[in-house]
Length: 462
Ligand code: FAD
Image (cartoon, helix red, strand yellow):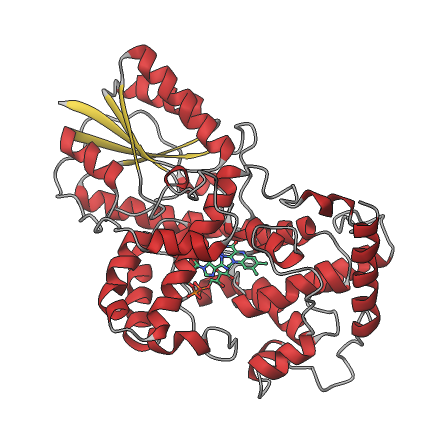
C-alpha cells in the first residue's frame, strides 16, 4: 500500500476535494495541515482568521475521521515541514489543491522540485477557483484589466461539476509521526477572549456553509439584485468565510445555482457575477503578487496619503487619532461607525458598508488604503489575500477597473438610501441620538474638497 500525504491549505472540506480523492484512491491517505508563518512573503493570519481556522480545522479533523483519514498538524516553513513529514511517514505520493499567491506558489514549486529529486509522486489540482488565472486572457493575450469582459469570457465557459465525498476506509491506519495539538497553536484568543461575538454569529463548519448556501438559494437569491445593497436586511449570502477557507467550493455554489440561473431572473445572475468578482480578485493577485502593498495604477504612488501607525502609543497627531476613531467606530459618522462596530464584534461587515467605511478612510481622512486593508485583514473572518487588497484598491481608485477616485461616497446619503429607517445604524450605534455620540472627526464637505485638491495636485505633478 502506498502512503499518500494530502496537504490541506485553503480547502478545508472533504467534498469536492480532488487532492483528497486522489490520496484515498491510493489506499492509505494521511492528511496534513501546516501552519506556515515563516516562509518568505507568506502573510501571517489576522486574529479573526485564526479564530475561524481553529474551528475549521477541528471540523475538518472530525469529518476526516469519519472517513478513517487521520489529520496531522505541524507548524513551520511549509516546504521544510512537508519534506520532514513525507520522510517520517515514508510517503509514496503527495497531493494538494493549488493556490495562487506568489509566496505560496514559490513554496509549492520548491516542494515539487524536492519531490521530483526523490522520485516521490506529486500531483496538484484545481479546486478553489472556477478558472485558473493563466487560462483566462484577452484576445491580445494579456490579463484582463476590466471586470465585465473578464466575466463575460469566463461565464460562457463550462465549469466542472462538483466531486463527491470519498468513501470511508481508505485512510492510513498505522502509527503516525507526532502531530501538534490544535490547542497548542493558540489560534483562539484567551486573555482577553474577544471572540464571543464571532461565536454568536458564525458556525465555522463545512456543514454550516452548505446550510447557508441552501438557505440563501431557497429564500433570498431571487431578491438579491436589490437586497444585496441593504445592510438593514439579510439580503446577501454570507458565504464569504466559507469560500475563503474552502469549506465551500465555488464549483459547489455554481452547480447549486444552475437551475436558478436558467430561470432568467436577475438575482441569481447578479449573485453569480459576485463569484466572478472573487475570481477577478484572484486573477489580479496572480498577476500582481504585491497587490496588498503596491498601487496597481502607479501614478497613485505620488498621492499624499498618510501612513499613521495606530499601534505606536507615543504617536499622536490628527492622522493617528482619526485612524483610531475609525477602527473603534467613533468617527461621528453613523454608517461608518456602525460598520466598524459590526466588524469588531462579528468579524464581518456588509459589502455596501465596507465600501463606505473604506472610502471614508481613504478619501475623507486621507489615510492610505494599505492601513485600512491591514485592519480588515486582522478583523475579518473572510480576510482574503486577493479580495481584500483588490477591493481596497478598487475603493481607492488605484486598482483594476476601480471606482474613480473623484467619486467620493457621502456616508450620510448612503445611509439614507440603503438604511432608510436607520435600523442597521441604530443596531450598532444605539447611543446615536444621545450626547454620548461624538461630533464628526472631519467635516465631510471640507475633507471631500481636500481629497479632490490632492488628486488634482497629484495629477499635475506627473
Ligand atoms: P454576497 O453578496 O452573497 O456574494 C457572494 C460571494 O461573492 C461572496 O461570499 C464573495 O465570495 C464573493 N464576492 C462578493 N462581492 C465581492 C467582491 N466585491 N470582491 C470579491 N468577491 C466578492 N471579500 C472577501 O471575501 N474577503 C475580503 O477580505 C474582502 N475584503 C473587502 C474589503 C473591502 C474594502 C470591500 C469593499 C470589499 C471586500 N470584500 C471581501 C468583498 C465583499 O465585501 C464580501 O465578499 C461580501 O461582503 C461577503 O458577503 P456575502 O458572502 O454575503 O456576499
